[in-house]
Image (tube, rainbow, N blue to C red; front, side):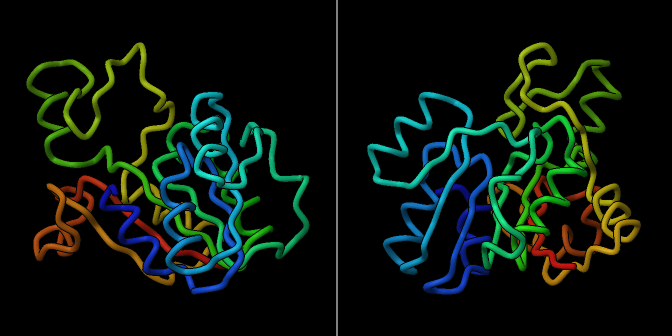
Length: 196
């Protein structure tokens, strides 16, 4: 399981109601259903991932996140999760608003485009970074909004979103001393737990 999924599932309470936006193949939901006995639903748009969810007996709804979560009432879930999807949606600010409307808390993880290797790659080569962590070229990337940790925290302040927890991952390790001290420069990925 990816590091961010290991970390964020620690913030999910047993027997709670969870919605995973952009749930992929349902790996996280399958694990939490089994280990934490959560009532879980996923939202996914990719047909292959939906098939994998169904094979794993994960409750999945085919839906475009950019169209909102109108089919869910306010406070329908204890936690709404969006892992490695924020940068791929067309309207991240609206999706975050919807997450906080339908969930008491939300957990978001995203790649930090302010990471020093991204900066050096772009500065030295003059091209968008391609790496193990960001394996796409500029023309086939699902990432349409490049966000840094500082950008995200500024956004949360502007929108009065309260950050309950934050963790940083670099080279497969979370919260190493340097990435905690200078996360915008030294963390590859950020994971946030949020509420209103």
